Amino acid sequence: MPEQLTALVGFESQATRLTDMSLVLIPGLLQTPEYTRAVMHAGGEPPMEAETRVAMRLGRQAVLSRPDPPAFLAIMDESVLRRLVGGRAVMAEQLQHVIKLAERPNVSIQVIPYQQGSHTGLDGSFVVLEFAKAKTIVHLEHKRSGLFLDEPEIVAPFVSAVDTLRGMALDPRRSAEFIASVAAEYDRE
Image: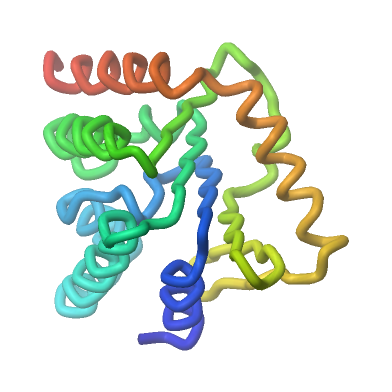
């Protein structure tokens, strides 16, 4: 595994709370194998490497179902739901999967609908990782690398943005209904 991914897996396994603000893609911890394959294919990953990455991503997801799992909040811009990744059937299945995961007591999903207009998350996706006995860190992911931020004065605006974005987003119940309506659109078309 790349060094950055190894670090991320370690941090995810130790975190007590994970908050993933996504602008473009379904958060990795919520992706189905088919959705992940479509993302890897679009990124030009060779098939064997893509399958390795799919397996790694699925392995990372176990953190959400282990005993005493971290609290996980996914805040997704509506564009995440509308971006056609892998085709309509893949998207319908992916969105149904997200709804099912949101039924877990440690998983919360909130959607920021287009009607909210611009918001503080538009400058990039990020993950906030909180720990019981360590300082909060932020992970930024890019095409071939990632970056961890740990200086309190740099992390603070991300933590503040989460609070703002949660207030702008639909609550978890309304978010699930909204996601279900988009999934139904994919099923109908």
